[in-house]
Amino acid sequence: MNTLPDHNGSQKRIHSIDAVRALALLGILLVHCGCCFGALPQGVENECVWGGVDRCVSLLIHCFMSGRARLAFSFLFGLSFFLQMDHAAAKGIDFRKRFCWRLLLLLGFSFFHNLFYPHDILTDFVFCGFILVLVWKLKTWAIVAFSLVCLSSPVSLWEYCSGNEGVFSAWCSSVRDSLTIYPSPSLADPSLAEHMKWNAVHAQMMTLFVDLQGSLFAILGMFLLGMTAGRLRIFEGNPRLLLRIAACGFVLWAAACLFHIGFVRDSLRNSEFRSPEWWSWWLREIWVFFFIPMTAWIFSHEAVLKRCSCLTAIGRCTLSCYITQGIALSWFFYDWGLGMHSRMGATDRFLIGLAVYAVQLAACTLWLRHFKYGPLEGVWRRLTRIGMK
Image (cartoon, rainbow, N blue to C red; front, side, top):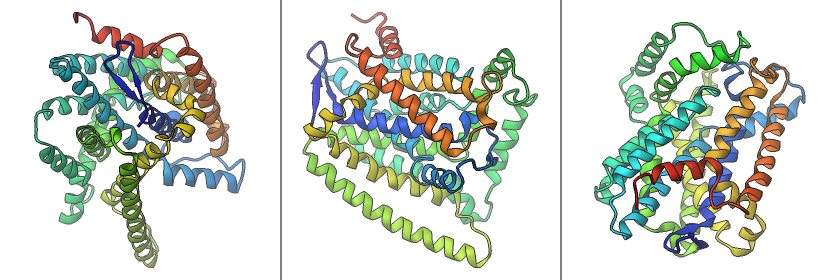
């Protein structure tokens, strides 16, 4: 597996994981562009500018990126958590308290980002990160069991089996609505000040209650599995192991898709298609089990990694790229900026996302020629190490 010694010679970096992280970030960017970073109301779509191409692009994002990119990113966060804790333990340092401080710093970045983009995922990551610290000393089998419970979408599955489907979601929605004193000015008011004021008061809590309806459990499960993969040294051993895991993941995903066709067929007989929420999350999670080991195996080859070195650069600057994406494209789509959300179809938004990503690829490659860390990564690291020798 490709690794790179850190500047102090003690820590090694797994380049293939950086490349996988870069692809996960691309998926998140394209999904967010698909909904104009929240500026396009849910369930609303602009008139197809490109006709069938728009529909194909929307289907591509929905089937291969929506929800899946966030889960892949969550898995990699759990893996990074283990690597940091493991490297510190090798030096005889208990890094748990320092990692909690690191999470509080991430919450600060999240709050700043939320002022512009009210659907930030970093708040969820901070919440799940504290749970990782709590379970750090547990046995591996206990962590795997805990992760499987989270990945099973326990609330949605209980609602489905007990016939109380939608009860918990309705409660979350009522709490979320009670936190909303007045509607978001994102579309109605072009003032950036009003937009930031509303986000500062309501966006964080609203996002958390929305994610409690399903995605927060899946994110936590992926965090735990990423930490488990780190413990088992899956990405530091023989690349053939990754290929075997990817093959197993593909078989499971194919079987799940066939089972999903049964849902579709039965629903069409009733003239309505609606798969259970827990099953939708299971499909996304199984896809991640195939996507991550497969892409990690591909980038474990020196020839591939050398040709795609720009991906490893953006994979080392994901925090900087994610936050700059949110700020720049919120200005592009929202009415307090250019207000382009109502003027672009799915294909246009897809191409905008690719263009922004291409600019960031070039910028990150150039930046890392002169610096060891990304802009925000460097600040985050320096603040994390305050008081350390």
